[in-house]
Image 1 (tube, rainbow, N blue to C red):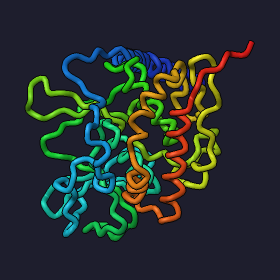
Image 2: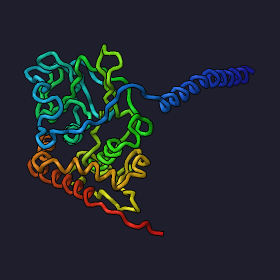
Image 3: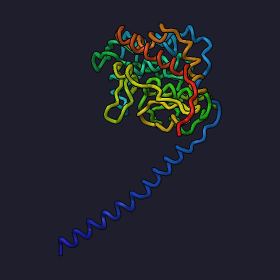
Length: 319
């Protein structure tokens, strides 16, 4: 009898637990739906025409010399949770805050950041430090420092399927850039919206904030790679063209985002990328502290992809 009562109590407990858990799950689903249906209002920017593109310094990148970190003393503040890489919040010699990324993503993310910024996309302010002493933690190689300016607030993330730029050339171009750099980790929460603190109706800057899973191959779930130049230079870029639609070779997340990209979209992007010199392309990878051999290989592979976009032509779809 005691065992029967115990079993009955256990069943009742499980039923009560399930009943109380259901509203929470329903609320979570509702919250998710609200995020997916979020309506953006007010001024927003994703891309601005880079009129000075031929002279942009890809070694220094966004923010210029004035926004480079003071490496005289970098001090650990706390661990920054989330993501594939180990990240620390740190302060530099001037007391400015940065996020230090310590992983093999630091190099490709820095190079990807430079290429996006070079052609007019809004980006983080980021710098790769070949060897960095973080007081309170130790010495690390190839650390990417990402600025956290005091006057900038991160106002959530934006979605690939729902944003103010859907259908516009600059948004189509951004998606193509994700294939061009082989970014296979295209998740909504890898994007960010930046606003100026204390400013009513501040312009919202839409950026791709995590570009670490790049310059490898997209491939399948097991065969994907990041920061592997030998994989990147061998990877296919364009499978072909059907009518006016480009079929890109992409095996990463958000694959549907690349459906319906046209030759005109590709050539819009190529018209900007083609303005970059070979030295600028190399500087993007020098900024990521790649070896001279890797710099040459990666820059040549990017140039080849730019040329492929430029030379696209329509073909009749096969029956």
